[in-house]
Length: 269
Image (cartoon, rainbow, N blue to C red; front, side, top):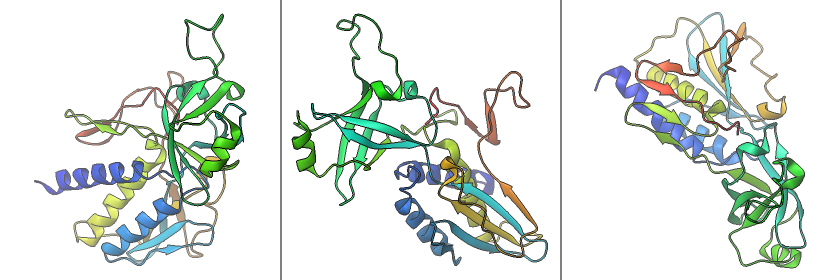
């Protein structure tokens, strides 16, 4: 296997690992734990800030550059518990609920319990509803995979308002090299930066300037990446870009490496 193929394989493996870790914005500790461990195993000395960001210096000298990506994702949390035992969600970050209607999800409680469920609108059956129900937030609910039919039943499970709801990532890599997944924004970029760190650690890449990596955890709600090393001369955000016919990136297929293509999903989660 060539060095390039090895790097691409590593990036793909890291993407699978990162997307398997639920990290809606505000619930990112497990994801940053993984980053810290992975970077330490490479021989680096990552640091985690009080806010939760992970910063690591890769090496090099002069003209300090920071490459930043984020590992928080869009998600939801429990807004309220309905009398029928279903959960009313509210969003973490911006998205369209129509992209999550029918999606499997996981609820994470404050005391570490985990419950699975499914996102549905309040009347998902076309055979029952007199007219379609709009897939907007007030019409969405979480049906738990538990025998509950009242608010008290749900409370007894330990679920409460404010608990985190994460959508299933559905990460798939096809034989032809296409990646289909939720949360490519921005776990794909984070995986690429881990690939760069691995190449530097292995001596495959020589840095011509000082380079640090910054993994932030509140990008989806618009803050958290402003603090960087005092000597930083440049900072580049490695993130997803919008595509469209009237934008600078009209193509629906974006290649980030010679043999791996990124297929945008129909969702915005």
